[in-house]
Length: 287
Image (cartoon, rainbow, N blue to C red; front, side, top):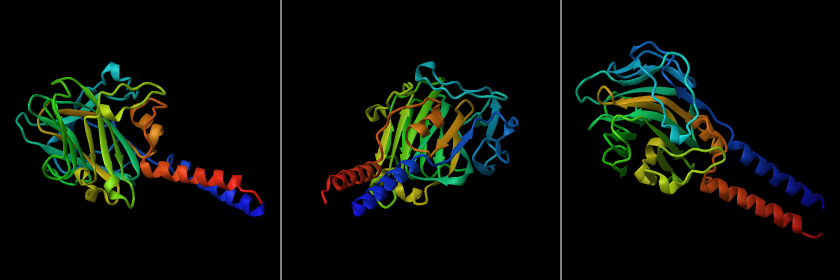
């Protein structure tokens, strides 16, 4: 009985640690309302970052918040001076302003942003890219269409997913699975319906890529820098949020909506399942 008790305690501890690990993370956010209007470069603000926004003087802070469509149920609010970011140019000239996280994120990462596009022009988010020019992994909205561009070329796309001149909500999940790079993945929804204790259906995603299509190599050390991208005035972005708290907690961090059910990462589910099976078998043993 003594041996059984020790083994049961060890497995119970493993279950506790596995569950707790999904709750430990950081939130990085920028609503741009605590900045001065004008060039974004050399300004800071927000929460969870280190250093200033950099790389280009063409991404600027302008007046006016973006507001998510009511039907999405998005519940994060903004305070301070209503502002957002966009390109200062009146002709097509894509630029990216990037900034580093105070602490890198890993595992299951959720992110969100509010965006708006103009006809034939781009806005989006870059990942682990530190340059003003277009490059590196990025989620790009061009006119009405969306693309995931892992480095060069396009590995995932969908057309006619947004309306020109209308604000839309972007919600994404990045899964970085240590030691099993082929399972690394990106899933992106546009204007999902978010309800308390509701669910997110992967079949409704506009982007769903894995492994080399996702560009695992660029995320070997996790995610520690992102950028805001715009190609022209009017292609704009606001309310940029990232969280690696995992699961429904991370979704609430980036949307303000609690209790949303999502599939667990495969390795996490297998680990919990294996530990639980072991616990059941041990507790059925007879001395």
